Image 1 (cartoon, rainbow, N blue to C red):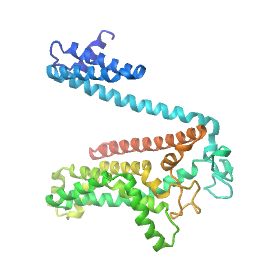
Image 2 (image 1 turned 120 degrees about the horizontal axis):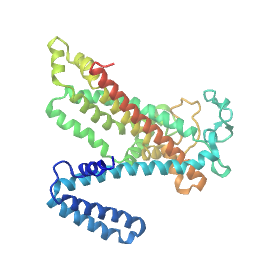
Image 3 (image 1 turned 90 degrees about the vertical axis):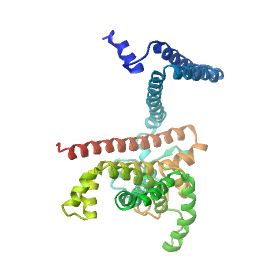
Image 4 (image 1 turned 30 degrees about the vertical axis):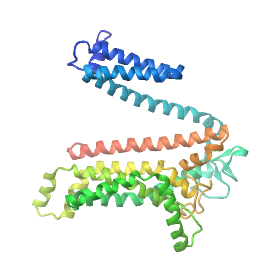
Length: 369
């Protein structure tokens, strides 16, 4: 086994058709990269010169042994990505651990006198749920606010995104598609704070006038975040629908199906894995949105009363982190890391769910059980 390791490593880095002398160049480039990382960690003042040496060695290697250097760079990029995610995950959980140990279920305090699905029988009850001066922290209101905003956002982005993707892929002409799809994708480039400001100024006034509501609410935040998630849902959904083989659609039309019947019975089922991934990505955008929600309803740490009141307002998990960390004490910072862990787990779960749905749909379409 030990004799096979060098050969395996050499094949991974250099490939099967490496040229003579490429191993030396790749080794030098790798050593200079390691030296650059160590210099950055222990003597940052000399990191830039070492980086220049690495770039120079890589440039020379690119001219002489381009394929091998390209493989090395792709390997470095992959390993760096995995290590970065691993370090972030470890740091996030280790930073949140003290708050878990100190507060435990106290992080899910239920307000006294307010019904919350009978959880008052198993969770602690207090008069307040966010009072750092008294060491009272409850993330339950922020979690509930995140759920409400996300549900409203998906109610906006899901149907509109699906029908938009269907129109671009199945209905619009080629010339129209060239204008519509880039226009939709441009929406993704607008800064989130701009969405929040427009939502607060435009939708807030409309809600106050039409519904006699006092101000910013979950409804406004959900609509704005749903509009922000639209480009993701439309773009990914359209790519999935466009990847459906034309022969499947032509066969449907050949047996007398209408265009809508073809879309409903052929295109959507065949592209369902991609459409579901698009919606899940939209949910991830809604859950993780910070600045737009903070701009609309930054203040407030209480539960909606009643719980389903979409015209109420409170901070979500992301806006809580954005608005509290600047002046937070050490114990409050630990609790904010717990909020980050909750968001991390939610997004990670949705990613796993999207992959599972995609695998199941692939098996179904291939006739497997």
